Length: 410
Image (cartoon, one colour):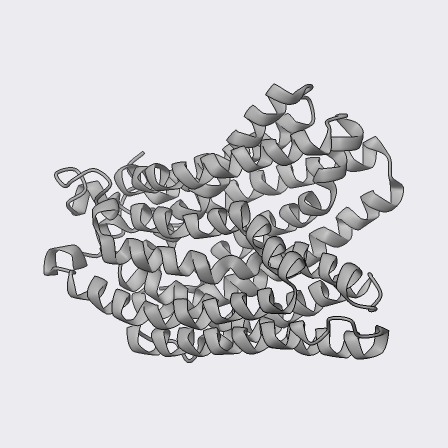
């Protein structure tokens, strides 16, 4: 594989993460202050949208297998761009919810289609390393985009908020153009068994579905930095509220700098499972350290929270590298998009259900909640072993067919 596809994949990741960073820090205030929507309606609308996104990721991933991942990725990137641009003109709750559903669906499908595209372009032994590089790029882009969004927040005007969202729409348009320049990958329906096989065979692949479910449990860490820790800091510790932002920056910089290095140890199924087990234990240690900050004054609590955040980001990088390897190694090559669509629902499920679960455990239960959440992580990571080995044992020689490089079927 030449460096050009890698470079284009990286630039496409940078483009959409830059826009996402600006969107994430400004969208809530734009929806409430500029569109005039009640916060409860915004929350409900986004919850419904991401619930739908978790359902459509699978059929959109199958579409990428049947019609070609490059063309599908381009269309979904354009769809995301159109959805964000539509936020600039919608008025009222119902149009907002419909636009949010389009946004979440396009984002979920794009994630699956891009994974299928990467699988068609990159040899199996190189995928985890490239995904680690893309994850580092994503975090760097999010940080830069968040800085742009911060300028919009500082200005506090409707025009500034609209400018941040317009930047996101433009960035996804650039992402689509970059993906279009990638080499085409033949649709799996042409070279594999998708056309004659069962529809949504991944739903009948119970071992793989179990691996995806266990991964969703491990992804309950996602709401920690954005929601649970800010509330924990202000309600249960004497640390200053701004420390929550500092912990987010620490996490982003660590992933940007060290994710590639963390992924080097993952080269196959065995090493992926070892790294996942280790990540579960480190996450347990992180939760236990976070729990120690309860009731502490500013400086002791701050030091404990920073230590917990360091352990948390180490666990995050290990879990990411291990799960990437499993998601590809256990999927039939002619159904990569379909399988990635199911595996990717773990993110949307964690983001939809995770905030309620995590805040209930941590804020209502306190230290026992932290410990329960921590114990859940090694339990899920150790359960990955038998589930993954059973999934690998179900693979057949026919399922190992690799999509060939050729003209994209659209």
